[in-house]
Structure formats: C-alpha cells, structure tokens
Image (tube, rainbow, N blue to C red; front, side):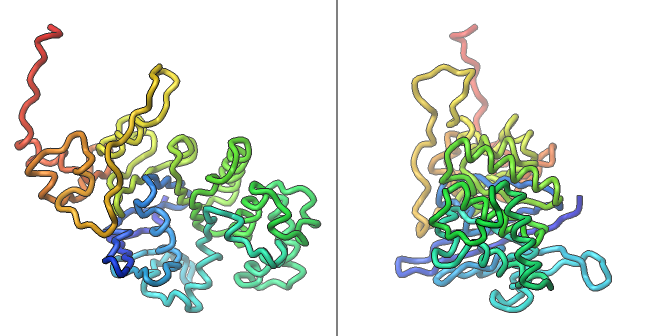
Length: 349
C-alpha cells in the first residue's frame, strides 16, 4: 500500500495570554491507503488538534506554525502527486474541495456538529452539491442511499427531520453518512463513539469497519478506548504532550509495547485473567501545556526514569528491529551506559 497522508514535524501552537501552549509539537506519522491508524493517548495529548490541523480547521489563537502535511492525490494525468496542505489557503477553493470531499471528518459530539435549525437532508445534500457535479434531486437520492447504508430506517422521511428529533446513535449515523457521501480517501474519526452506549457503540464500529472495507478508504481513528483500537486498527500511534512517542503495527504494540507510556496505558486496562481489587494507574498528570520541560516530556511520570539522562536529553525517534518507531532514551546506547546493571535477587535462589 502506498502512502496517502504523511505528516512531518507538525507544530500547532496556541498563543494565549498565559503563554504559548504547544498542542502539537514536532509530530510525525503516516497513513497508507486503505489503512486504519489508531491514535491514542490521554486527554490533552494533542490528538484532536492534530486532526484539525490536517483539516486546516484550527482557529485563532491556534496556528500551525511549521511542518508539512503531504497528501497524495491523482494529478491531471492520473498519476499520484503529493500536495502540502499547509501551503494551501485554509479558506481557498482547493482546500475546500479537499475538506469534506477527499478528506472527511466525524466529530466527537454529533449533536454539536449538526445544525439545530436545518433539516438532516439539507445538511447532507449541501455537502454533496459542494463536492459533486449533480443536481439537487440527484443529491437527495445520494443522501437517501447513504442513510440506508448506515442503517437508518425510513431514510426518505429522515431527510425532513431535525437533529433534536433523533437519538445520539442516529445523529452519529447521520454524521457518518454525511462524511462518506462523497467517498473520501481518508476519514478522520475523532472519538466517534464516546457519547454512545455500548450497544450502539458496537453497531457504529461494525458499520465503520464494513464501510471502510467496501469503500477501501483509510481511517484515522482517534480514541481513548484501547479495546476499540485493538479491534479496529492496523497500526497505532501513541501521543503524549503533542508528540508521537510510539508507532507500529497494532499487534506488535499490544503484544510487546516499548515506550514506558504505552506500557503504562496497557497496564491500566482491566483484564479477565487477572484478579485484583484495584486498577493500575499512571502516576501524576499530563503537565501544564504552558510549562517547558527539559528532556523527555514523560520523564516526570516515568517508572524507568534515569536521572541525568531523561531529564536532560530530548529523545529522537528510534526505529527498532520490528519497524517500530519509539521516542525513548532507554533504547539508546547512552542510556544503557548510564543505567547500572540489575543485581540478581538472592532471596529467590
């Protein structure tokens, strides 16, 4: 599979009266065609801002100050050509053609994303008319077909409904229908099941998997739920303080996590094969976004912290033997020299 989207050294900052919050700080990752990339991390780690940066939807006081977002699309001769989305005007004709057409997004809260004063059918057909050369009647037929694909009953009648007349699960299905109405190459799903009950969540996830296979589109799936990632994603990118600290195949990361933050996230999950009265937690909290930390951004919470190394040296991405990329000083030669050898415990001999 060839690369559909490549984010290089992306930096999105918010310039506030209290200081500069580096929401996305030198983030790098890629998504291949037809691939599902799961993006995980605690709240405040920059997942949603990364998605909005790709869509060129960051509003002041936020600004994308540096980096590249290389999107591969066919040129006039049908050959694949990369275009840097950051070089396009966020409100220009070309970016507006890509946003919602070739790259679509499902937002975290469907009721807040749908207009409360416009009918569902008008909102879907508006997106279709903007990106496709069809008549309004044809757009309405496409809208009805999309509502059927997302399993909304009485699709023709639902065109005249308002968002407040639908349940949360139905609103989320409408958002999915709207996002997929123009058959995008990339779908960005930002916590699409957070506000749903577990039964509806399972239905939405199954629906997205089926549509992804049918349309052969890539998905950037942002979530806190590692169980969903294990079921949905081909690759996983773990974010912390605006950086991707580990990325690799989902099976490899869940079987053998490398970064201490990834290990801590997985250890905090309840497991059926372990009987205990308490859940493992990650000590401390995500640092203040205005604070400036020396060294590794996770060193204040890391159980494997090496004094004089992790608090002084900023880790660079390291590619491991299984094509895993990790930002951690524990895998550098310098850290191995600083870490003393572990003494054998004679009490168990």
